[in-house]
Length: 463
Image 1 (spheres, rainbow, N blue to C red):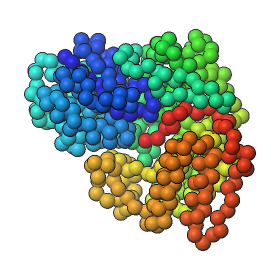
Image 2 (image 1 turned 90 degrees about the vertical axis):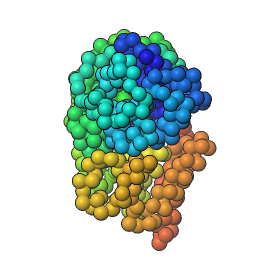
Image 3 (image 1 turned 180 degrees about the horizontal axis):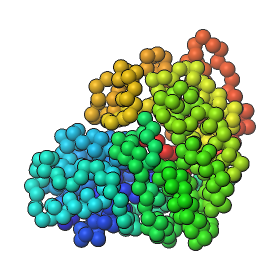
Image 4 (image 1 turned 180 degrees about the vertical axis):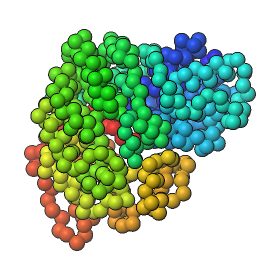
């Protein structure tokens, strides 16, 4: 059985979502080709795609799924006999549309056993490629507890083809990627993990994660990104892994993602992270407006955010913040307040410019739909866009969002430092408040010209 696993985009990382199922499928006897289109300029017009029995698209996020949607018809045209599958977080959420585009099997959650079962079924039954979707016996969403295999990264582009870590002195390090857990204990209303996992998280066994790290270090990794939605969903598990990794590779550094409320609850563990090589923590702040945070069910407040910033600084850890600044509840004054807070607390370098341009996505199954005010605001679900569309009641906010997005895009294309882009966004926000005189940027000239003072990845996180 010839299988092609395709990743369209995974934030500049070597895709764990190909490497892990590849290990399972190869153990089951399948011939597996992993195709990462972010590193393959030839697209899907590859010999392996044309001869595959099964082509499976990995769709872990909104952007990756939009790209896969564009390619499904092309794969069907290239290889009409292949069975098409979509697997990952966004598969079950968008099942009907993906099936109309040609996907015959849909798998979300813990997908590896489902992919193995699918390959075995295809091999045994020689299922016709046009079989109806009602005939899928594999679980659409599986939350089973798995005994994981060490990811098999053979055939993927080398790590030096992916995003790099940039240090304050300008030095760059090769970055590997792994996962110590999946899913999340929490049910934030806007989070796309919730429609699939709904408060459930699953552990990847310690020995599996450590062996994955060892192999990536042997392949040149100098830094590891842990992709867990929240590394402190199971703090003892995570710490045991990084402590052992540090013993084996004292010069290896890493980064993790942790919720604001978990940073506060586990503040005593932050020094341990720093001592074992953690350079920075990413945390989804989302907003500095307590009313918006309550609607999103984030579990923290503006004061909590600032407390977490201080705790991380005391521990010698950089805190990278992500935001969803444009929501139905954003005001022009509120956006300016966000920028002012970042400047006042010396956080401009802690926020990738794209984070100041993000507009709230409301995907299928979103808990935001529990709010009556959201029901009244959104239009019918847009299958091609994978979201419920919405417009702000104040058209000026939508215009500002478009202007901010454009300025970020141009600034990043020009290679401007974060502070310079921030100054341009500050000006745009101030100009949007038409009744006011445009205030000067709150950042001193020396900051606008300086190099970033904290480590960061060349490919920032976004959805």
